[in-house]
Amino acid sequence: MSDTLTVKTDPVPDTSRSTRPSYRVPLLLGRTLRALWPLADALVIVGLAVLSGLAYHWAIYGQSGPVLSYFHLGLGVAGLRLVLRQAKSYDPSKPKGTLRYEFYLWNATFLGIIVIAFFMKVSADYSRGAVVLFYVVGLPVLVTWQSFWRRSIREGYSSGALAVHRALLVGTPDRIAEFRNHHRPADLGLIVSGVVNWPEHVLADTALGRAALEDAIGHTIKRVRQSDVEEVVILVPWSYVNAINTIAEMFKMAPVRVRLVPETIMDRFFQLPMSRLGSLATLNLARPPLTVLEVLAKRTVDLVGATVGLILALPVFIVVAVLIKLDSPGPVLFRQGRLGSNQKEFQIYKFRTMTTTEDGAEVSQAVSGDRRFTKIGQYLRRWNLDELPQLVNVLRGNMSLVGPRPHATTHDRDFENLVASYARRHNIKPGITGWAQVNGYRGPTDSIEKIEGRVDHDIYYIDNWSMLFDFYILLLTIVSPRAYRNAL
Image (tube, rainbow, N blue to C red; front, side):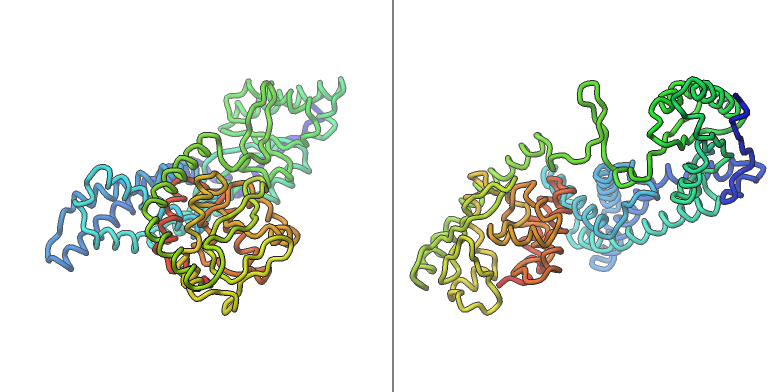
């Protein structure tokens, strides 16, 4: 049956670098640079910390200052950033490294360092000016460095100067051509040593097909043993289930990594995790946004934060209540139906800021200069004080301190028809503040662009939730000018 097997021993055209006499230099360089990427990041961060400390102390005090302390600060920031980022994200082919991602990562890291320094009682060892300088200068320098490093590795892959693995492409001609056109092996860090073409009838689930496939695999394994190939990339249609099982079993005899490349449609699911349901392996297409432990942790912070907030804000509640009653007739608190987690309706509490208390099927959004605003109501909205009663909603479990801001129920129904992913906002509890609000997406949603911008930020929050992210948003809610943008 060996006549059904076609073997192409020459390297494929777009990897002409494989005609070089030795693969060792590009392979060694490629693997070394990828392995050193986290270390290089750490060295840059430590250097920035030390230089920031030196520059500040020389400029202000005319001396070098505690250099060792800033060295330790740099180590702490570099270590925490690596933990938050995870080493597996140091891959030039992965879409990490966007400005937004790096901005969030840098701020989350610094917030964590501040908390750690507070509890370890070492914050007094550092000049606040030097730390602020390190924070301000660090992000643009690190983003520039990350971009340079990532681009250098990618260009090295494409040119052949760098590589990570020697590979043999094995499968049907159509799937091999599709793989090479769609992915370009060079961009994946692969040196393609050769191609083994299997006619599709070899994969047929018949007696002749099974015999031909076993013969083809045997020839391929022999080829692998006689070469310096480190990876075998299998490219066959997934509809041939029995053939894939045979391939998986027989290639265990070869001392190489064997990869089965999925169908092109699976590209959109490449970041999804696999899990087991009893003896069944499943691909998790969707999951609850938070695990049970994460829900418990977030709820604990909500209870503590809301309790402390209500105690501290009690004098403000009394003063605001008196001012509202003196300013205009009507209740102190405004109640309105909102949709919460899993679209369960609840009554939200706010300080009344308008002369009307609309609820139901018709609710008019407030706009700038709205005549319905009371005098005190304008100030309450401007400084977000009208939201304080929602701490009670947090205690009752209807809301969280941080999450997508809830809209009036009737507006939710309208927005769902305008933005396809809008309903995902209800996969988590709504919040008193949120990622969209601290980025300026407040006020009336009177255009599709504003609605989409708010939804995009809310979904980003849901998909990237962490406790540090929540603390960061709470901090921005207080100190960031954008958190007050578009307030009515």
